[in-house]
Image 1 (tube, rainbow, N blue to C red):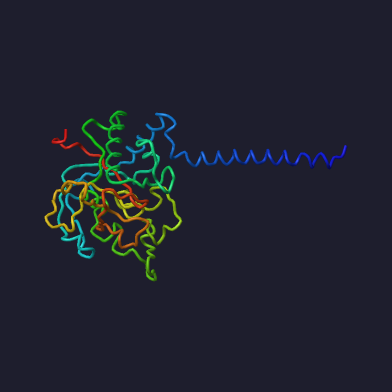
Image 2: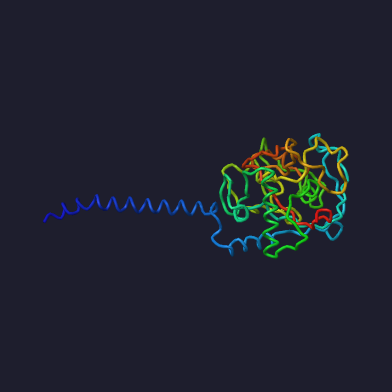
Amino acid sequence: MNPLKNVSSARPQMALISLVFFMLAGLTILSAEEKPKSPPANPEGKTELLKVFVKELVPITPGTGKFPQTFQMGSVKGEPSERPVHKVTLTDDFWMSQYEVPQNLYQAVMGNNPSRWGGPRNSAEMFDWKTANEFCRKLTADLRKAKLIAANEEIRLPSEAEWEYCCRAGTNTEYSFGDQPQKPGDEDKLARILDEYAWHTGNAAGNDPPVGALKPNPWGLYDMHGYLWEFVADPWHGSYENAPGDGSVWGSVTVDAPVVVRGGAWTDRYDRLRSASRKQEAVTSVSPALGLRCVKAKVKKSEN
């Protein structure tokens, strides 16, 4: 018997076994990567995600404690759409989500994950304004069924005024941390002060972060500056002329009318991430730079 001949004849078999092994390993890795886009394994897993969402809501109590009753909305230094600066008085308590909606929660509620940049705790994106509202309605139903919110409470998009009030967090500067996003020597898109608080075009290239990876604003809300533009409930108006002063949604969204998005995104320069910055977006727009943040609030009596 020639041992070299036996080794030589065994090589094709070993190669085949190795190929099958690596193919199976590759399938296993692919399956693991796809898990965030798969349905929840069990109802208990979904319930835990719902509990986490409720735990991460921040109570906002205008007129009590650190929360002012009124604030100045808009900016004299920004775009014409941010003027006139006007006083807004909020009278109702609400809860603002600490984070943009993460993909694991979106998947559990909607049964799918359309996001381009996958990750269970990354912000959900790639859906339009109508779908954002549908997510809020389904989340409301799930939370009521699980008895995690009261029957007279709902999850919804914030009004534009509620959003800016929470972004400012009691400040009247251009950002919630001050007026200057750049350190001496920063040029073009670099903004090293802002880097500590926000994902923007100056620091986000190649990043795929979970929510809350950077510093929060003074009220403990993360990613209010940057990461994703966030849908709000209001239709677009080209200025604040005749805007309501009570923080309510200004008008109704129609099929052809654009809506407001706030906060700036990882695709934007630092100046688009100011507290007062706003942009119009078509109701049908879908983008990896568009997401949402939720509010929990009492249902208005007229809506019961």
